[in-house]
Length: 593
Image (cartoon, rainbow, N blue to C red):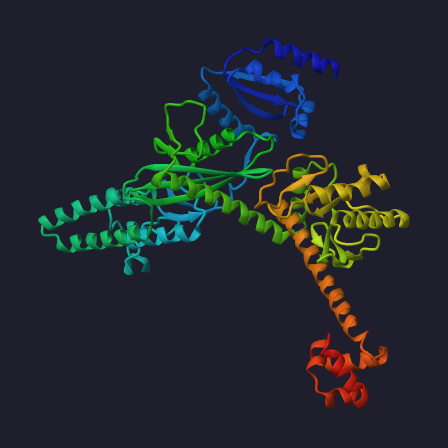
């Protein structure tokens, strides 16, 4: 190992301060990681000269046994070479596209009389490819339009025949096998189809109109009528396209969304004011690469798939890497800004749909993801598998109670919910009540030898939180659990001793979990408090009624169900339960209270 380190030190000393691409290799000579650098020496040395927060980077560094570099003239050339080498070597630690086999393409075979069909197995050597299409329906509508406009060969093998097949009879094939169409005419139709697939539909319509007029001038009215039908079909298809703005044309748009492990790059192609193609790439971000690197990965991938992007590209932020190949715009308002926002929404919805699918396949995955997000947001050392939340409740200082909800692995564990009647606090002292409840709860768990929760949530601000923490300190369990408070007005999250709240996105799954825990303790506590208050109300009225003991009180409640109905009962109805004399006394009493 010492020899390896010495070898790497020697390589680092001799690296140039020039743009280039570096490759990290393991002991077997396998490429672990490919990266680009504006200055090779500075970038590569940074892996070995500092402590890294990312566990993935630390793991990578321990496996490096050799470093290879390729020097280029510009950072742009380094980006292109990096992209090429990632596809060549497929290193374990590099970002990887995850949708290569997920979506269909439109294939145009490289033959004298090409076929056009959808495929999920692209073969670039044998076919010209267009796509991929994230919407199969959109692709099928396009293919149906093409087949309606142009009869095309359907058979897989072209064999010379004397008689055409049924496809010719129903006008679905021009019968090249019988020589009914010349290769030049067939190829001209294919070129029009390719332009339609690319989105240049207005150009094809104009060309067809010119051909129609030429046929009319030559008195070839039957052929002119056929072309007119083709124009109508194509114009009808254009009308159905998603029109964004007639003023916008020949634009490519990118939007991006990221989560913990992946980036989602959404692509839109705008031709003649309409969205002619939309696709989202999923990129596995194994080494926590920055947003610009991920965006470049998406741009270069779509450039390769489409055979080139338009010169003008709309992006959510401007790349720092300069290139003459494309002009990048970051629109701030107007139609172009709406397009970038649409691309970003597409990326966001793609991410949500992916997570929903994963959650359906493995429901535990979502719980784990949410708990990990909460752990990270609160800076916890352990996963908050068990969460307990406390809330106080009283009515104008009377009947003080408290409630506790409990979540295990992100789900309510209702058998673990608890109620607490306040025993030592007189009046409406929420701070003292909270301190009492926390002390009683965890003193009992310690006595019974039961495990403490990972996270305790106090429904209240800093005052409630500090009071609860006093009980934790009295029990000497400060290092065995984490406690936070939720301020009721703004739902800010406070940790003990912190002056400012912790920022958690209000729409995040972690925040929603805390809100769910808090809402459950509210519901559970209010229900208990209402029952207790109701019992007290009944007892206070009937317990003091002259001549009414426990037995008669129970009979009255069984008969009339509530004190309100007892008040409304006539003397005769009361007499059926307690007798005429006591009914007279009870009726008089109820009118005075």
